[in-house]
Length: 463
Image (tube, rainbow, N blue to C red; front, side):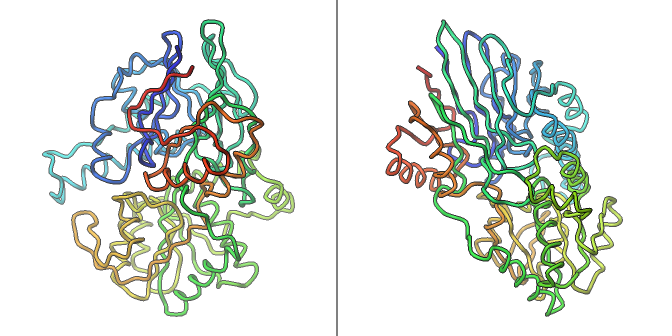
């Protein structure tokens, strides 16, 4: 009998891993890093719950690190099968996995230098060489339409509208003459957002595994760019610098697009904008390359000769030296830098430098997981420990949840409304307990479907 086991993103937002078993074969949907609280991050260092060598395939919904960042570790521990992904996701993973490994090596060296790690010596979770080895296992699959993996598993991908290449996976499991359809939303995107197409509808599933990141709330919908424009103008008027911890994939490109619009409409000044993330720079190039994911408005602007992903005074800073030179800037500017939860990367150095000055402003534009510096800033902390030192928080902190790339409660209801019949059961994943439980209550009242919040390491039989 086919089985489904939740090995991550169950009871939390990160570490997405869902294991499907049928006829003695094992297929893993996503293979992400746990992020946030120390207890979650510790899971990355523990032995994988099943023998990696026993897994036959991995298939990816999209490239974000909480869905792909454990792949080098999985391969290092013995996985030898193919990693299946569409072309855009594969190209993004070439950037993200190398960068993730590089940052981990860099952070381990920095921790050793500063002496703030409990481990002697501090080690990276995996190395650049191990990331390179994982990338050799990738096999590209079609962006849409049916694809047969084996006699047990066939899939069809639909646009998820979350980031470039993001997909909803409709999986048909064949075993003992019976077929079962399981749909995995991955990270479901939003409707009427810049750049990307809307999430595609799916009509049928025997079982549905759906995200619940924003299950307890709706994103602001009225005048969604007003708050951004007001924040930029406030900081500029007082001579401050704006630091934006932004995910290199998706959020950075959306912000570049919106900032360009606001400049063209003369709603904000044309400030020097520093894209201080080699990864985000490379990803932005991919966003312009993969036009199959672009919505009609974005394609029309490109056809008119507009470069919609460039502000009027944008500076791409790839080198470490260029990044350090930004610290010397005293006049208003915008710094876009990863990571989006301020848990690593160059943005941490910018925060150390800018947080103590009340003229400056930090803009939070995405989900901030529990235990991350971004969540601490969101919760109003007045002091933050970064790279082993205590940093005073005097800068203004602004939360802009309307820039989230995840469907909110109402958008989830809208997407689910496309199903022609209720699934046998629906499982909620990729959400903190409060958000997932709230969505379970809302959807049960609206649709009356059998559903539950998935539990970590829980196994269910797909009858």
